[in-house]
Length: 137
Image (cartoon, rainbow, N blue to C red):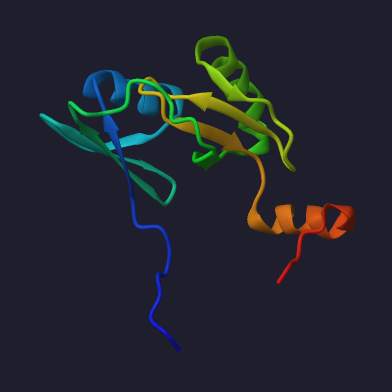
């Protein structure tokens, strides 16, 4: 068998204002701050390890492409969090996917999503909708 990755280790996001970004990920998205230093912070959400790194070259607006990070949220917490995000943050895409999703920008313009669902629920959706022509393995 060929060598390969075993999963996602961590995500690092370049940010302009570390204090503002820590507040957003902690107070809005509910991450737990695990470490903080002059130019960075480590946060956790479930098994996700998120690093925020202050960077003078950090983006000032979102990239035009579809690249984004989707965070899992429970069905029970989805509505309250979605309502807050829609009211307070820029929305970059309308939800058209399987499962409930809200697509929003963080304070640095990173494209983010909260999503209710799993890989299995997504595959089940495509099995139930063969007209979408998705080949499932």
